Image (cartoon, rainbow, N blue to C red; front, side, top):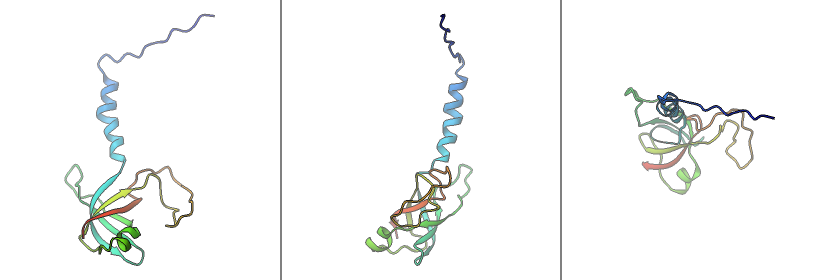
Length: 130
């Protein structure tokens, strides 16, 4: 039985490589949110959530959309004793998976979407300046 000869993929002008490195990788990277510095616009002390404005501007110089329902954990409002208020500067992280069905407790929850590292799943990780 004769074996098939493997064909080589040839890209002498590096078109595929350049597309991956110059277009695809930056596009994918722009969709992955890890952390952002933000300014608090409002704080709901009952629900322990805040609305925050990301400080980095978009590439065209415009402001980014506000983050809503950002979770403020006990480590911020109870343990540290920091008073979160309007214009506080915070460090916000984004969940690895969607947090839509998370109740805030220790129970496991169902993931309903394929959403990852989304600005919709924001949590205050630190207060930089209150």
